[in-house]
Amino acid sequence: MSADAGSPHFFLGVDGGGTGCRARIEDEAGTVLGQGLSGPATTRLGIEPAWASVSRAFGAAIDEAGFGPAEIARIRAGIGLAGIGRKGALEALKAIAHPFASIAFVSDGVGACLGAHSGQDGAIVIAGTGSIGLGFVDGRDLRVGGYGFPISDEGSGADLGLKAVRLALRAHDGRYERTALLAEVMQRFKNDPMEAVAWMDRASATDYAALAPMVIRHADQGDAAGRRIVQSAAEQVDTFVRVLFDKGAPRVTLLGGLSSPLEPWLAPDVRRRLKPADGDAVSGAIIVAKRSLAGR
Image 1 (cartoon, one colour):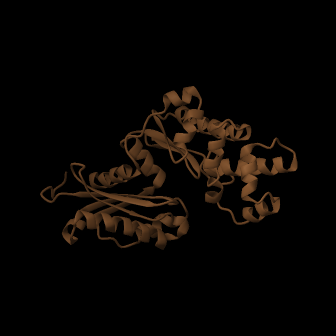
Image 2 (spheres, rainbow, N blue to C red):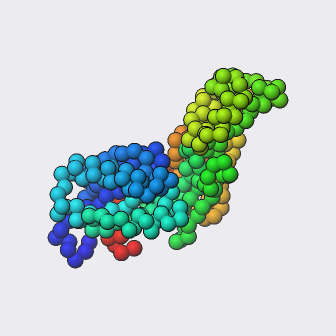
Image 3 (cartoon, one colour):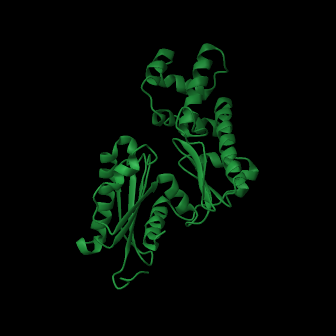
């Protein structure tokens, strides 16, 4: 492995997302030595809160592994973090002191893509609260969408929620057929459009995405408005996948909280071409850590 092969290396992978943070320590053989969990770790919260969450997760993994300072100093760390593309975020993270042999940062999406394809060329489409397509081919980075809600993130949970509220308001006016889904959406706003307006003024993408399970439940039960919304989202995901293949991706994996409920709605040609993930985003972060050891 290296000149000091007598001292084993340990690899720490961290996946820090908008909903939570997971850490895992493995030895050179890939045996899991310790794991840890913490709350949201995205730079949207600020660099200090994001790093505090990452630290809680890897601290728990270190405790479970029973490591002391000597072992910690032999850890190579790979950290995948949401929002790392924000201006100044990477520089601020690199400036933070750490006890490890090395540390490398990537976006949470890159970590997920590396994990999904065991570090090989390939792409992923993430359909969760937001949506994005990304990947690597021959040293090139691929990207499709993912510019944020509401201007982008088509086919995401937030997008499903927005469309449901929009159609519910139309149905309330008599401009659209009132279905069980649209009635349930309006019930959330006490059947008062002004309640929906007040909610909109402070609602985040996460708030809109909280409506997505209701939309999918009604769609699966045959609700006409639900089916229209979910079919439209599936068509957006179809496009993400096809464009990534067109850009040269040899394999594409669908990930995220909406991936399972949306998959039955995807076009047959897309479903046939999707590949299951080899590993998770923590696996991808460990690949990043191992590459830093190899000097890549």
